[in-house]
Image 1 (cartoon, rainbow, N blue to C red):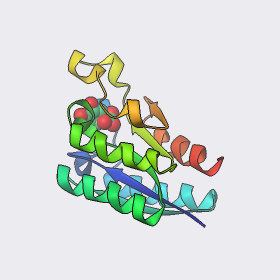
Image 2: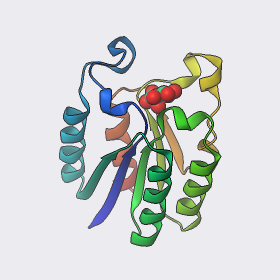
Image 3: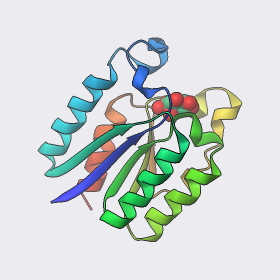
Image 4: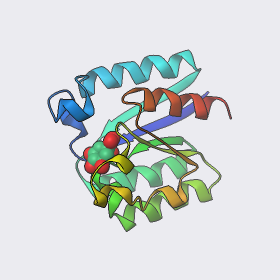
Length: 145
Ligand code: DQA
């Protein structure tokens, strides 16, 4: 069975109460339950994690390489400036593993600093702007490979 790490970056643990006009009213725990369900429906084993710590995200990318896991990554604000995370993501796709960058919102419709993703250039693909469905679509993309 394919294992997929869903890795979530800073502030996503506050989903549901954080700017619900932008990020919706689904809590992180509810999103986690949905992702486990969507993964099971697609025959995927899902490992769901969230951290506010850049180094932890980097370590998780290393673990994905070592364990041969596909990755669904919402890098949150690290999207826009973390070269360390970008380099770690490059190791994932460099190992021929899928890495789908996801965003709840479409960063290109928002503030200018969100228009840059330092991760996109080393991701397999990006899905943004579909709310929690961005995660479902990313899992389908991995299951369809
Ligand atoms: C986000 C978009 C980022 O710009 C922001 O910093 C986030 C969430 C999204 O899912 O839409 O924290 O990644």
